[in-house]
View 1 (spheres, one colour):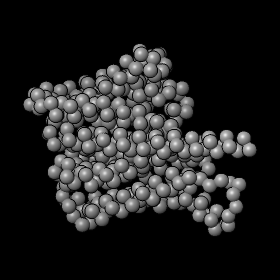
View 2 (cartoon, rainbow, N blue to C red; view 1 turned 135 degrees about the vertical axis):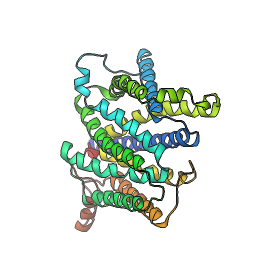
View 3 (cartoon, rainbow, N blue to C red; view 1 turned 180 degrees about the horizontal axis):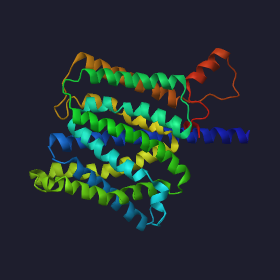
View 4 (cartoon, rainbow, N blue to C red; view 1 turned 45 degrees about the vertical axis):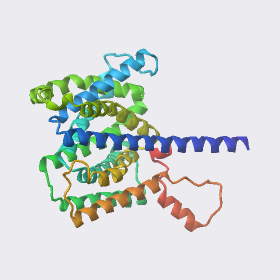
Length: 339
């Protein structure tokens, strides 16, 4: 009896960690998307590259101070650390920069719809790199999300080729980041704080040089909105939220799968999609576009039900039809979701 009670308590704790980390990541991702869009579009800040530099700097400063105060722990620098975490720093930097570029170039509803292509890429990478096979229900929900996003893109009246390219590059990097983050958390012995700190530390100098060569530092310096306290507050909030988002991504990936992390990030776009029709003023409505967006949203809701539905007790009775249904709707035993 005690053993059974202990197992039930452990199962409840695991489910809570999965759900709470997913909610934390979804909320963080929602807030930073809205803040970034406000800074880059509503306030017309000229450089998403400078904003990404601010987010890298905030992550380094916060984690360095936290380690000095013994609030967090991660390994001191050593010569083998770059080898142990490669290629995560490159993926991390590219994901951040191109994501901000897409946010600046596209309306939030279309940005949210196109970001769902990262789900299909993550599912394929999980299969190739981690050997994780999705269930039929997962496949159906993923293809619904991607199909709806494709339908919306076909009738995007505010089409922006550069923005589309940025988002598709971000999708690829998001998929790679989720899968390799899971792999490094299991093998690199760095911990989530170490990965966050060294990803930012190794990329701050290349990002600074690239931003300077692009001329964005000068453009940002000449920006006239620095004296506006509302802009300055949101710029600083965006920088800090970059650190919080990175932490929430790692936490969600640690307790769930890379695919789950990717889809939770897209699921929060349900709110972003509709709020984005009023933020930035760059969304152009069409019926086909709206239908595609809503199909994609429905796929997101289906996947949420499939992934986070509580598993039944293996000792309980039930007919074969019920058992078959449960096997269809729940992730397979080999998925990282169940670890």
